[in-house]
Length: 231
Image: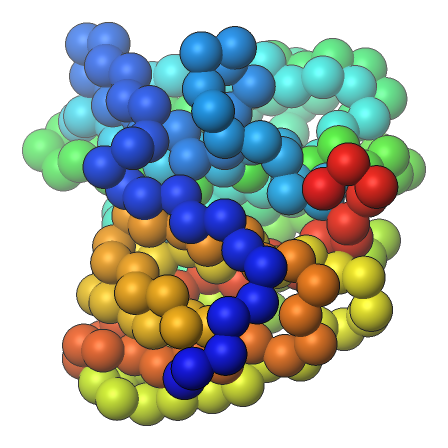
């Protein structure tokens, strides 16, 4: 891979980290005024969270924004103001949007296990909905991008697990689309950039994305999001 497309690298070591008893969070994209990260298309928040056994956290969600929750290890209990309640496990993705502000309780249901999950938010306006999807097992679709959730407008969400040295090329669904990559496990080379676990790469104005796993069982998230004039 030798070509270099317009991009922004967000290194794991540069992420903001917040710690309160029982909760640790890393903020790759955030609205915090002290952060230098910025939104990528409709995607304006991307956090990784760890919850200690039996602990919980509260998320405040604005009206007309879209929230996605993606467990990475273990499972989380979800409850909100609109009487939505579910147990969400690794291999599933929850999406929700409402016309009114929402308060969500996320709890670790285990007494002796730390759980982790990804939280992302989109500024795209959509009709109210609540959806939980079990996506295809990445172990059964090695080296292949798997949709983790239905598209929201022109936003698309994928995950993939790769063997070491396996390669793929992804073509965005539409033109003028940005792509946000986040490495969950292992290491990758994506569009000529080296990425390790916790690193992210925002790509702009590229018609295809070349990726190669540099370690066995490497896992990556890929989010397509429409670009705006300020991106």
